[in-house]
Each structure stands twice: as C-alpha cells, then as structure tokens.
Image (spheres, helix red, strand yellow):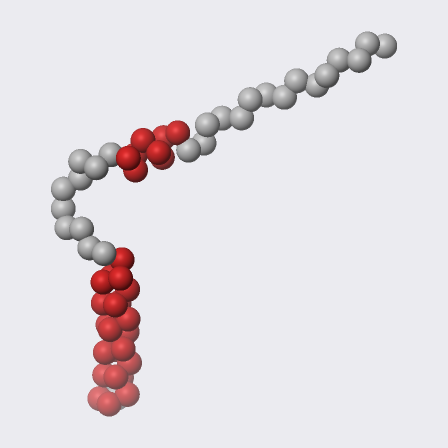
Length: 57
C-alpha cells in the first residue's frame, strides 16, 4: 500500500469582497457618531416610558 497524503481543497476567501466594500469612502451623506445614535435611542425610550406612566396612554 502506498501512503498518500490526503489533499485538502483550498478554502474560499470569505472576506475579500467585504474588505473592498468597507474600504470605499466615496459615500456622501450624513455621518453620525455611534454615541449620538445610542443617546437618541435611549432618550426616545425614556420619553415613551414617561408618557405612558404620566399620561396613561
């Protein structure tokens, strides 16, 4: 019997397209810091809870 090593198939490059997509900085539009988005969402949640408690909506 001959001892042949099992050949593994090469794995596909899974993040090649994602890296090119995120490196592109040609988008125009509003850029907002993540801290502002979190603060606005938490304030909206707080306002809706306060409205529900005090106005019994």
